[in-house]
Structures are given as C-alpha cells and as structure tokens.
Image (cartoon, rainbow, N blue to C red; front, side):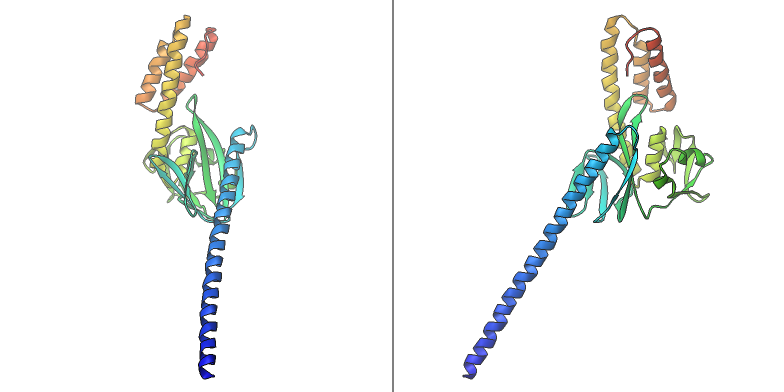
Length: 259
C-alpha cells in the first residue's frame, strides 16, 4: 500500500514537471511570437510614415509610439534597424544609436543643387542637444517644433562654425543646411556622410551623362560639365551655386535645363 502511494506521488510529480515545462515553453514561445508580431507591425508603420512624409507636399514631420526599443546601425552597406533581429532599410537615417518610448521623424530632400537623396532625422523623448554657434537662431529656424524643443544654445555644446550652408560641426564638414542637421542629430555622422557622398557621386554621373547628351542639340554645356567635374573632386557650396546659376542661364538661352 505504501509502495502504491509512493508511486502515485512520483507519478504526480513527474506529470506536474512535464506540464510545467510545457506551459513555460509555451509561454516563452508565445511571448517571442508576440514580440516578433509587434516588431513587424512597427516596421510597417515606420515604413508607411517615411513614405508618406516623402510624398506629402505639406507635412515634413510626424511621430510614432515605440512599443519596443530600437537600435540604429550604420555601415558601409547602409542602415539597419535592430529590435529582435537585424532589418536592413534603404533610408538615410540621421539618428541616435538607440531610440525608445516615442519616435519623432523629420524629412528633408537633399538637393545640391539637383536632387541627391532623402534625409530622415530621428530623435526620441530623451533627446537633448546643446549647440554652441553664433548663428543658433538661423539653425533652429527651419526645424519643426518637436525638434526645436529638444535643442538649446550652450557655450559648452557641440561647436558649429561657418554658416547654415557650409561649415563644420565639431570639426566634421557639412555642405547644405540638410547636412548640417544630419551632423547635429546623428551619432554616427561619419558613416552617414560617406553614404551621402556615394549618392552624390552617383547623381553627378547621371547629370554628366545628361549634359553630354543635351550638348548634341546645339547648346553649350561645357561650362556646367566642368563645374560638375569640380564638384565631384571638391564638394563645396560655391561650386553648387555656380551650377545653379548656369542651369538658370541655360533656361534664359532657351536651352534644355540640366535639372
């Protein structure tokens, strides 16, 4: 009789252990499944938000609640988001490396002077950027309120020298207001800059080829071709202004414009 009771207790313990293992395993798998589902939904929402900003004629900023923390990574291959797994994206993201709680997004096309690529600036509720610059008001003037509220003037802040079109941020070069903002909001600006330069060189090649084709129509594109070559070798705002003026001159001369 005692043996039977002992056996029953062992049986109950074994069955209990098996059931506990099953339910714990099920709970872990269910939690993992729910987190992956949340990740997919968030990535879809983010993609929609970025696409909508790009296609909108009026709205340039928006915000999204973050159900999970996200990490932003930049490499020579481009940008990726990491939540539970790596997700490569085709967007250029000027961002902190880690974002949480609420995501604020600001979109600006980068045109120097022709279209090069699209910039997306990302910050969160914890963002607090201090700027040391003698043209601080000009810098923040074009920012949406959600970004402007998280930037302040401070003599001990990041040092910005030059003007809104060209200069340095803590010694790192920028060309164009959009690149200035990227240098301010990105924690990996050097990587961002190298990717932009690649995109810029691709755009230059496209317009060099276009200018060569248009020149066969009888108009002279030699000067603008020369400036495009200069821009490829020396990325500076004066050359960009020269190209912009030459493009206007082509229109005045009733020639097809370059862009």
